[in-house]
Length: 469
Image (cartoon, rainbow, N blue to C red; front, side, top):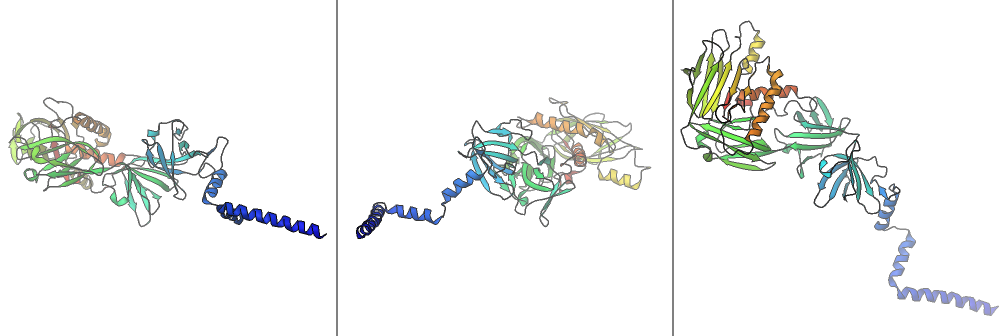
């Protein structure tokens, strides 16, 4: 009996000794055993278990949210490094995944699209490989609405709401707008910036700037101060000393004229950048003279140029710069407008409308507020580019019907200007203002009126811009 007890004690001692020797031989193993014994999981173990629990399907693909219904805002696409970054719509968590030629990019209808089809601000659903953490698929969500080309909007920070047209949409207090490669705040929006919105019901999920702005800075302005500068066909401003103008991004033909001098030059304005234009380089040799052929559609009408009666049976010569014209005839409204002349030759056709007698006071006020709103004025090019830039002016009753034609003419003007570094051209600002006003009232959907009440051309009513394209 004693022998058996001794053997038992020896066996216990041998087991203990073996354990002690093993522990001395691997000092780290005691720590590892202790961790495992406590039941505390390492971060690596937790992450691995999370991946396994996130709804892996048969080929190992998972959705980061686990059920494939969570929405994500695409925040960046890096086509060079083939990575895509996302922000989870519900909680703001950030994700970044690599993609390859096997990644499926789909529109909301499930049709395959190139990766360049997607832009920051898109709201998508994604599928990620559970094993490699590669982006296996990305599809535009069919659950959201998208408004493009929004110009009629305003933001009220006190209620954290963006008004688009006449509808209000809630947005997060810290919401920023995607712009180019970065983000901006509402305070950094330009007067004429165009937005793109994505949302669900009455809640905005993302906002992007689809057309931003830059700045045109003018130097050596002395000769042209007090006259006007035309930037493209929608910005018309009085020149002040070394002024800087906010301009929507794009290419524009810039024109100035004064005291017999003037010229044009194409400039490109890039988003959030400033381009400088030296007006000394546009004045050219002078003084220059423009020969204007006036066609007045009423017999016996009288034409006044800068307060002097002009014989419009032959071309009227005026110097480059700003001039005032008036046309009056018995039984017709009198037209008074200013012309910015910057071409060697031009032709202006003026068709008078009936006088204001018999109209109500409101109708008279409407006619006065529109400048020469009751006149039909057709400006036709002469010379090398004749016929390329006809601008049809319509009365207050016909403006809406002809607005589409006016916009087409403006588009043609822009196309004709491309690639030309210095060139005179002819157009009419009144047509421009009419087109802008009609666009403001007739753009449907999320567009409509420009959100900016200080329209760049607002102070130029009654001014014509004569430029021979």
